[in-house]
Image 1 (cartoon, rainbow, N blue to C red):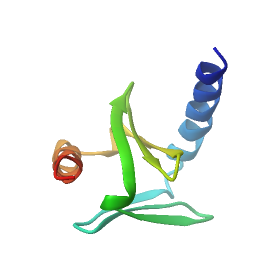
Image 2: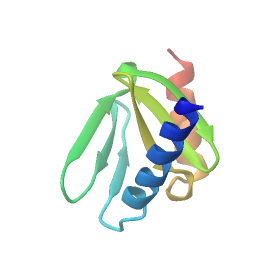
Image 3: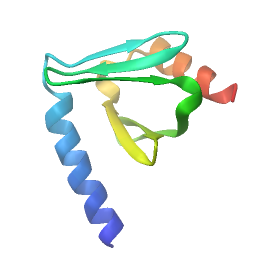
Image 4: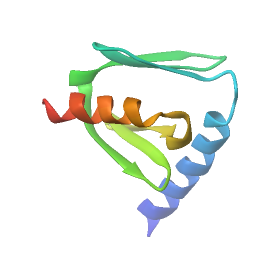
Length: 89
């Protein structure tokens, strides 16, 4: 139960961050970059441990920390590219 509550809180927090129009997502052959007004995170594909699409979110695990990306901002082509990158590992 505790894990579920923590997950819900993280998801609500992530929704607030994701909805900010200043946030950007850049997907390249070598990495994925998430930028906000305060910071930027670039992650190489081989450093992503797991990824899932759940309830309108793309969730990936990097250094045991979940990162949330709203499915709404991803095109189908971008999602397929991410799936192909992750399946090659």
